[in-house]
Image (cartoon, rainbow over all chains, first blue to last red; front, top):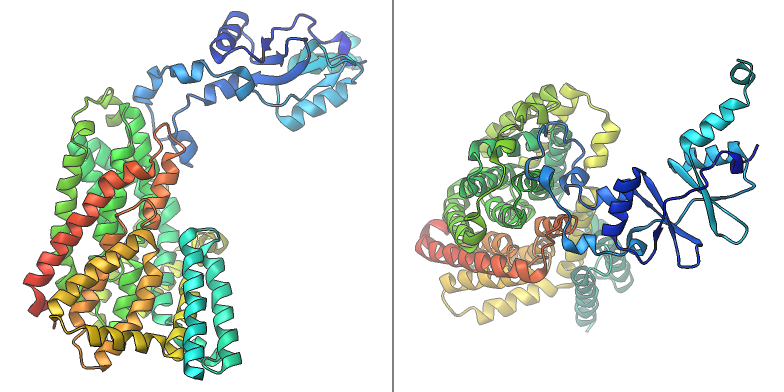
Amino acid sequence: MNIQNSMKKRVITVLDTDNLGTAARQFVKYHVGTLPVINAKGKLVGVLKLHDLLMLILPAFTNLMEHFDFVGDFGAMESIRPSREIVSKLVSEVMKSPVYVDDSCGLSRAFALLHHHNLTDLPVVDSDHHLIGIASRVDIGTAILKNWEIVSGD
Amino acid sequence: MTDMTAMIVSSVIFIFALILIFTEKMNRSIVGIAGAVVMVGAGTALGFYSQDEAVLAIDFNTLGLLFGMMVLVALLEPTGFFQYLAVWAARLSKGRLVRLMVLLGTITTVLSMFLDNVTTVVLIAPVTVLISEILGLNPVPFLITEALLSNTGGVATLVGDPPNVLIASAANLSFNDFLTHSLPIVLFAWLAALFLLLYLFRKDLSLQPSNTEAVLKLDPNEALHDRKTTIRVLIVLGIALVFFFIHHTLHVQPAFIALAAGAVALVWIQPDLHKVLQRIEWNVLIFFGALFVMVGGLESAGVLHQLATLIGKAGNFSPILFGVITIWMVAGLSAVVDNIPITIALIPVFLDLELAGINVQPLWWALAFGAGFGGNGTIIGSTANVFVASLSERTKYPITSQIWNKRGLPVMIVTCFVGSVLFMLFYPYLSR
């Protein structure tokens, strides 16, 4: 079993030249947590995670303090809006270099990569580095379980 | 002729090390270690300084006092006590900004009078960012105020500031000498600094904070997560203070009291020693030790004696004026260079002046005021300033050198001015 059979073939993406405002709309519209970033030629150049986008507006004190459990109410920080500066940043400035697999990758290796890099989604590319699919932790995990006798026997 | 060579060689080594420390191209403790080794090496080769003399040059009284207090701070740091105080101040302010600034500034000052300035600011500043963010405010006015007031307040006590520890050890000044001579003058300088800061930040302080209820929901008790250790450290610290008051009558050095307090606290709390030792600022202790060795070389080579003779010859002007000049000169230097090397280098000069029959008693206070107040002037003037600035870079409001100078320089000038006026008025008293 390789990843090709368990990945989603319709992938929600952003272009590296899009800004973060566009990316935010994609996250909301399609309710996804990871946006593979492609260039104009359709090649995978990066990954933008919902988590990284939110980190940009997180209060500074959460990074400065070891303990902040005593803060029951974030007050003004709850209604914070990202500045125009942040929204107009390019996706290419914020995206991380991608962790990906090619379409011949086995499921165990795919899962090991997700685990090692603490990711939830894994883009899949063809031999030309074009993005052809994306597999989530759940996609890969359930595909592995399907091979188990106790599951398939039922 | 050899004397001349020794003086030139040792001066070049010391000045070169100071330049490296000043330009911050290299960690100051690394410069210190290398400089000390070069000084002893050159001294041995040229015959002006030996390893035995170098060991004798290290003032273990200063190192012991600093180490003992560091142990107490290391035990108190992880308990959440500092956060507790800051959160308590925030609640007490009820979102009124002038009150918040005065409270946070006062807490930082009082803590830094008895504990290390830098640690105090390191622990209070993140909570200040937290409070400001919850209130939807720019934290910069509060951060700058805390650093400036803790620099200023630290001058008041023997244990408040490393230069004071050095001065007290060299001039044999007691804890109470500081309380009776330095504290009253620093109090006025501190008040002047506070009012000046409230004026300089009047625009920021007139803003309406957006969410005061959220601050009232902060629970200081939850911020304090190790109540037992906190209470024990505070009891030990309190008893140590009492002993500091009477150390002269007991004929013990402050270092002994600090080390005893550290020992008692360690025995009582029995912490994970590995973690405690990690929080000790070894680089500061090494820096001090290395500077003692380097300055010892200067002294052995006769450089400091020459300097004192020069000052003595030029010093035909009145001693009061000499004191005031000391305040401003040392302050000016401390604003741009670390005040610890300046203090360590000036101490033997003053001791030499004393041998020449000059009453240097008031000069010790002038040195303490200059070294302490001068650190306010620039963003690199004190370690607390440097820390606050680098912390602010991780928020949306980075503190630039210009932002600092607009507040720090006026505060430095005003505190030095107040210090000078009171120095002149109370000159006879300070001479005793």
